[in-house]
Image (cartoon, rainbow over all chains, first blue to last red; front, side, top):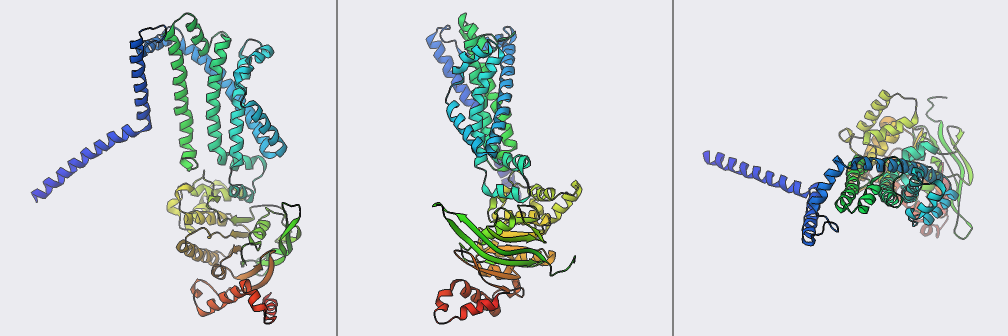
Length: 282
Length: 276
């Protein structure tokens, strides 16, 4: 009897250990932990390379950059520059998505409009938005309007392409079900087509966001200050001119961090709550 | 008139369907098919592939306009799709993947209109219970098996109480065991609820089991061969000698034409006699 109890508790302890081990394994296998590990590895390689090279004007080390980042946030108004960039970015992004939704809606309803949109997309999608900046400056002058113009151009075509292909791949059965239950026009689009095309629409939003971000930073680099407050591109440009290379790197780190943050907090969260939950995207 | 069991729910007269071909001509898929479905009747369109039975069902649903002929639902001409003729399709992806089982069933009720939120919730719960899926009511369709998905589709259509239920080979993509079970469940629901049904299949056994009346079609183009009553054959009659006899007879009418026509004209006479 006592033998039995002992062996039982012994095995229970072993099971406990196993679950702790399994938990550690699960944490190590989670995408977040893996990402963190990759980032740490990159930082280490960077630190070693910088120390070997020993030329902070050409390549500041990771720790120097981290210090410059903290200093940038506390002293040099890196946060303000970031907010200035983000506010322009959001204006352009929202405007572009709005225009693209109207274009795609018309294209879905009308085959001639679809031909127009596919032609426009094929024409403008390969054209780098930044190449339009000289024209934008000619038309709109030095200011936010020019930035928003190139931003809209950079978002509208890739998003329209993704959304249109999403609508075109909605299964025939779902379309028939929508019509069978008496849905027509805008109600049909809102209740059947949009949810069914959501995986493609979300990936279009994601691509559009990345395009907008890189276009904005590039435009600010060319362009400099736009309003009372310069953006992140301006922060990078200015510090490069004064050879504060560590601050340049801090500015680049801010761009990357916001990219990662928006991807994880916005797009992944929306996907988890919708298309992954519904099983329409793995 | 109301409550008269013999009144026509759906009436198709001289239904003809032509489709344009790639070469610019037209292809006749369905030629001069007529039938009437009365209240509580279950009519099965039965025929080999290519006889246009699914096309006829899509026309009744209002997805396709007939090239000639008249289609009336309770005396009013059918002009387009509407929730008074709900379809259960063969494909499993007919459920809206972004809605739970409950929300899918409620979707049909909402589309029908005239109900408040509490009534919709109650009717949806009843419909889900009828097909035995109460435990899966809050699951998303991608977690369900094929048989469960078809049950939800049936519940969604029945909950909205259409004038006529249209089923387009709803069990064809299921495994044999599940198919048999769902056929039995459908007959049970039909007998307890008394809904009117137009059912399309190429399986003779399924047709005799599910239907109260068979409408046989030939292929290329779809033409009426015969129409007769099989209301005596329920699930309990399956495998009985009488069931086998009818099944054999239907098989001969559908597939044995050439062989039997050669010696005499008995085949055609029989078809004429059987036509009602």
